[in-house]
Length: 129
Image (cartoon, rainbow, N blue to C red):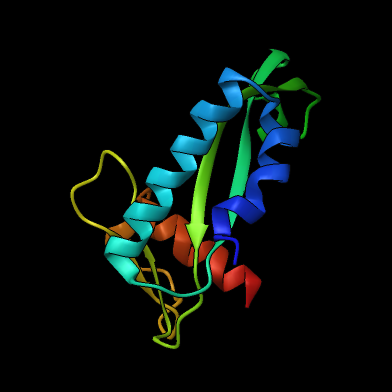
């Protein structure tokens, strides 16, 4: 039976190409899966990749309803995601000692969180709801 990452290989090759780039990215996903398993145990995992972007012109004018000429770059952020019954979103991120945890039953604005990662997670969950 194929492992989750073996099943993912065709996608990784399409996304990152073959050769050295593919091997580096495959190791990156392997480390991500290993970290996920340490934090959350076994279970079905989905992977996500969000490309980085660079703004060639109009930097930040999109926030003011202006036009931006942007392009994706070959850098991305990746995530391993699993479903739980706990009613919370828990995000572990490289470079942070503690996870970001948001209770999905408490999606109202928390003034003390303003400008924080937890506030962003809470706001996205609220809008998805």
